[in-house]
Each structure stands twice: as structure tokens, then as C-alpha cells.
Length: 357
Image (cartoon, rainbow, N blue to C red; front, side):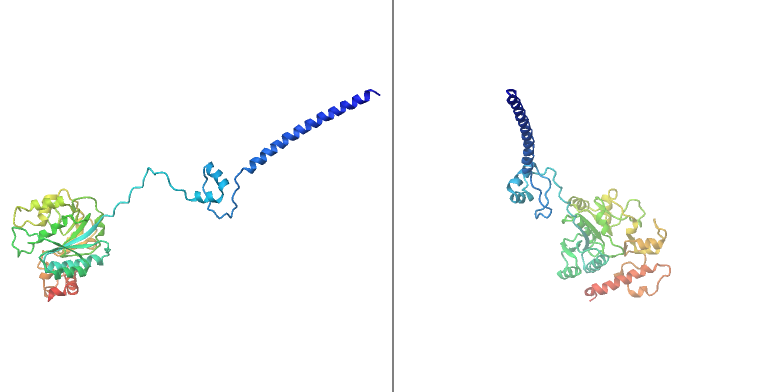
């Protein structure tokens, strides 16, 4: 009877030990779950899909913590943070648009009329109003002539006429040196100059994109020299230095008939650019079989840019020709040769009624 209580005590101790082990295991399990719960409770809540704030890019961790603490207030501040950094690689400024212009000159009533006609000719071929047509007008002309040019849409710039000192004032080309004032710097990067006693057949705006050169001028095919250019059409980069060279060269002209074409060739025939000959064709050449790089004469005529009224027959400048002289046509002449005279007279009737009175 004495041994039974001892056996019961042993069982009780075993049960107590088992209970302690079970409690320890339970505590370990509960501790792990508690840590998981704590970790979950400190995670930032994901915004719902229909959240009204914009979707933000991934942000540094400190912003994530702040957003948990401050909510929408911090989110609103993150949307447009003030810039505090300086960009080291700056974007280069856009290139300035070159200032370009057509230029003409006028020293008397006839050249004013021709300039008015030329302004309309240029615009008719599609040159936009953003490209001005500047006319250098002799300051000795009456103000009324300036008005005629302005009504045609020209920008009038008064200049001092430039007379060849060894030529009498009555000479037709006495004032032709005035055209050389296109080299004076007036704020233009490139200028396309035209003699106004001509007809433009094709648009010339592309000439403003020619490369850098003191001037470009078509080869003077009618002279027969390899390096010689005419001055009916000039593409010029204005330069006061270039103009000073012209002034110096003309202080003591080598001969009386030393004009603009002579001095320009003497200075720059070997350093200028040469557009093809068909950029300027003299009107008498309409009756010649010149082909150049074209397949035939007609293609050459169609591709010509400017026809310049020139001597070469009894029919030269339209204002020196009476209409009766065209009543009998030479069948060997190209029809366009005669048509250009009638075209000039039609334009004179339309734009220069004042010169006929």
C-alpha cells in the first residue's frame, strides 16, 4: 500500500514535464506568428486602383515611410517636387534663321518701272512675303517714285547714286555702279540681286541656300572666257570689307568703260561660285542652238531661270523698240524671243501707267 502514492507522484511529475514542454512549443509558435503580424502591420497600404492621385514613379524608401505617416499630404508634395539640381549638359540654343532678301536698284524713272515689274514677277513665282524685296533707290529721285515701289510691295532704301567718274552722266550705264551697294551690310546674311531689265521664268528662292562665298554668279557664256561671270544675277554675302575693296578698286578705274561687271570679275573671278549658265540667258541666245547639258534646245529654254533683255540684234531693250518693229517676225527666231517683248509691254501698261504720260 505504501508504493502506490510514489507511483502516482511519478506520473504527476511526468505529466507536469509534458505540459511544460507543450507550453514552450506553443510559446515559440505564438512568438513567430506575432512577429509576422507585426511585420504585416507596418507595411504601406497599396492604394486602390481607382485612387484619385496620379500614379507616381518608384520613390526612395524615405518617401515611402513618409507617405505611410502623412498620407495624402505627402503624396501631394511628391507630385511636383521643386528642382534643386542643376543640369550640366544644357540644350544648345536654336540656330538663328538667316536674314535674306532680294535686291534691286533704281536710279531713274525707267529703272523704277522695271523694278516695279520685277517685284510683281518675283511674287508671282511664289516667293513668300517673309522674304523682302529691297530696292536701293537713288536719293536724287522724286519721292513719288518711292511711292510707286512701296505700292508694289518693295522695301525702299535710299542710297547715294554711284557714278562712274570717267563716264558722262548721259551714258545709259553711268549710274550702274550703284548696284554695287548691295555689298554694304544692311543686316542681311544673304542677298539675291537681279538686274530689273529681265524676266524671271523660274523661282530663285533656293539660291539663298548656297554655301558661303563672297558671291555667286552664273558663268558669262557669251564672253568665251573660262573664268568670267555676268552680273545680271548675283548671290551675295554682304560685307563692309568687300564693299571697301570695291571702293578702293574704283577710285582710279583703268579705263572709261570700266563698269560693275569689270571690277567684280577683276576682284573675284577666281574665288566666286559659278551656278550653271542656264541661270541667266541673254534674249538673243533664244535664237541660238545652245544646248549645254540638256538634251535639246527646247529643254534648255524650259530650264532657264532668267532671260535678260540684251543687245545682239536690232531688238534689244523693249523700251527702245516700237511695236511696229515686231509686225514682221523672223521665222528662224524662237517665238519666245518675241513673246518676251510683248510681255514687257503688257506689264508696263499694267504697272507703269505713270511712265507713259
